[in-house]
Image (tube, rainbow, N blue to C red; front, side):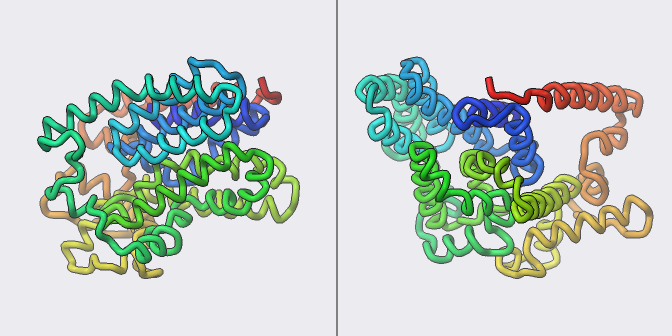
Length: 382
């Protein structure tokens, strides 16, 4: 639901603020959903996915507040950001960027916007201060800043290592798991010239987010799939690419770039869904081969290992490969992680009648086809 709602607000933004047709906006949302690791996190219990929805919704309402000056939009924007900060402390970064956006670009309604922001953020701030006091005894110290969480959250990592890893490492670079962002980088100069307020917000969030998470001791997101912290801001970072994808498609090299990034992203995302990356890392850990190479090695990094794992799973399904086994894992986990890790494939193994699974799959497919047809027919912006 969180990923679906994120795509909903992204669709609305592309149509309302950037004048894409319904068909173009729909294609862009499908591009983000299926050709990046946003797809993988649609079924992962990670609070960053909720924050991705709240951030995307907040940006939509900020842009509409700048365009129409309605107080309700500012209230919804900063209410979403306040909820996001209470969910994940690092969301203070886009909250600060939102305040700066109102101060710099909402010239006709600046004072009203900032006043509304303070009113909207106040209850969330009070709740967070109270929660901090209950957990740590200090209203200004969050639980995630305490020693027990230092292995992941301590800000004593090497900034240079984190920056290089998040941008260029084969195992944890955000561009490996979301190749779409390469198009955003290429399109950002023209996006800056045409949509400077939105571009300034996106740039501010990206730079501050990158610097903060590069400084973390666990900058790569521990055993997460790819740089998991960046899932939260991925929909916002994809906007420049999606806005100019229709015009880019008009040239031959533009089509090559879009198809290449889409194909690379789809292959990696689909292999992470077919298999189980956490299971693969557990196997490597038990074998004593899980070291820095899963981040830095080209041939043994997390991304390549998952592709190899998906191929092995396919061989097991057709009967030409042998499944691996994690001793402490359940029978169902071992079964799914060595074959097709999808609910429609594993539910019969758990005792659910195949007829029930077939009915459920059929209903979803019919709904998918009908809604896709309807969305694809929306040629003009509303």
